[in-house]
View 1 (cartoon, rainbow, N blue to C red):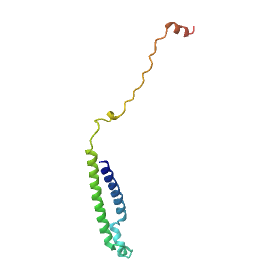
View 2 (spheres, helix red, strand yellow):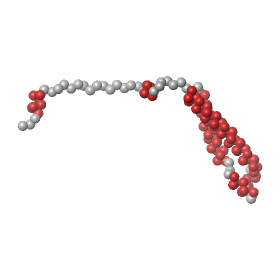
View 3 (cartoon, rainbow, N blue to C red):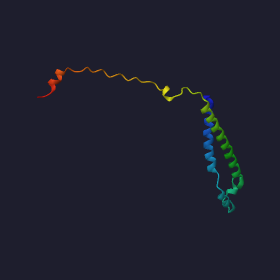
View 4 (cartoon, one colour):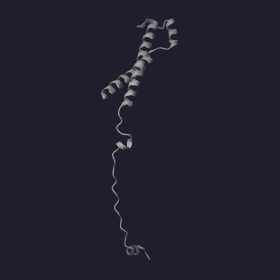
Length: 116
């Protein structure tokens, strides 16, 4: 189960970073106006509208992968058996040594300490 958890977590992180990258690569709705006036977007690899469709589809697929890995990670976290019912049960118990018992001093010795 540890190997499966590691693989899913790795895919989850890669999907999250990829979503960030693809969202940053996309251009906004107002950027299409610049292409009409010769901004150079129409000469891109996918054409003026092809890049938006490709990037939005890849982003949607990555979002689905991110959602599914999130569900899988939450299932793995809740389905693992619990070792004990309390956090305090798993902590080691430390014993503190008892202080040495003091014997009462002789009352005559206390009288010698008091100045007259």
